[in-house]
Image: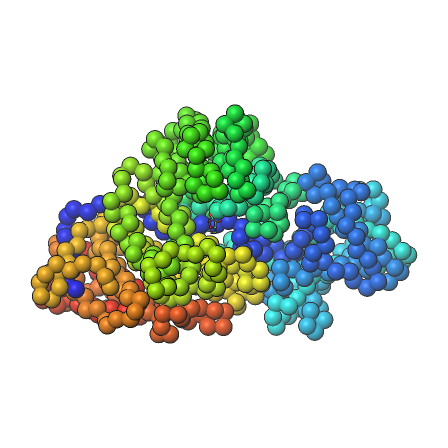
Length: 626
Ligand code: AHR
């Protein structure tokens, strides 16, 4: 195919084209990005999950002396005369590195004037990897906090390690413990922060926005079970947590303020989703009761953006953050076209949130949570989980969408294999565990279609973001991991998003395509978008070649009108392929399914760049200079 990229026409594109979406699914927050190593640190789901007794002691959950209103349950450790204590297996293990300092704390209740011993131990060899003793401050009838540090004397061979808290009473005794916490060094050393290598994987994606906090987990399964921002603030003793919709307890240690720090650390814009009165069991908050939720969203915005003279701005300052954040984008709910929510969303829910938020914050842009209904100038959110061929067929989906309602593709992924028909996903059938290369290339075709409409499409984000391989509810995901950082595995879709996001087209340009016999060429099996990249001061051409039944290499020639017409002008061509074929995918054992080839292409006569793209490939050509 011979492509001529015009020098004028086209459109400025959204600067937010590539972003990330997060909700706590697949133990992606607790047991994932949130760096806490102790699982069930405050018994928030009413069990002793992940805890076991040490020596001849016994463990029992009690509520006789609540640590706080939010954390009423604690563990009572009844000792014999010998060593007593409790052991935590972490989120399927703990990574222990000699080079790292581990910061811990716990609360105890009951008289004890001996010492506490805190250790990290190998579950395989029983070897002690780190240990420290601290003097007890524990007294009768009151909770006292203890802090400690652990410095391993050696790195563990693997992540099969546990944390142990021991004490040695001289007579039978009962002590209670709660909020037993242990953090490794976190990304940028934030207290209560994030796991370093997972954050680094996000930084490497070069995202522009963070859509939080969901997803279904925003909505909640039933009345009252929604993600309630005000219960995720302040000291951990004040955060009750909740059982999230993905069936496991959310500690809410990763709360609203931590989300804002996360966005700051990635230097991205936040798309803040606010709970909009729809629960996944189909219950909808009636119009006369929705005002409370609207007010709560306004309070949330005041907490984030308000001056310290406002009640919620003052609360933020009191928590240590006097400087307001700036929220420019709010999404009202999540997938409000589902679970029987569309009628109420159309008749009053979106309107009530939109009108109230706009009245107080006219500068905020509001996204509807569905493409099936917009209100005034709201944007819209389009989600698609499907099969490779089907997603590829949606390349032109946005070509004729009405202007004026920017689209966030807030969730997309190829989740099932092709059938012999052009079929959308089958929600009764299982999803793939890993992103296969053919599906990832289909996603690239779809996203290039979005980029071609970069004046309408505001941003795109693959979902879900993370998967803890030891416990997950949804696959495939963009980044898989376990407690062991060596297992962190970007999917086959990751390098595609990374490549496309690294080279931002800031203004699309029309492309005329002809075949070698000079007749008009159409898209397929090659799909493309071209334009200028202001940041790189260059022309950018992006393409994907997708032929699900296999096909020959596609010879491509590209001429940028108005660009250099000199023979010998140079451009960098990056091509992603999977030598293992359409079903190639990354796993922790083999993370190299996708091959990246970077070459310098020199223009031929008239400044024409010629190269060839294999079937199932994704490519970006960036000229040196405009
Ligand atoms: O990404 C998984 C789920 O898919 C999200 O929670 C929901 O928004 C969508 O249906």
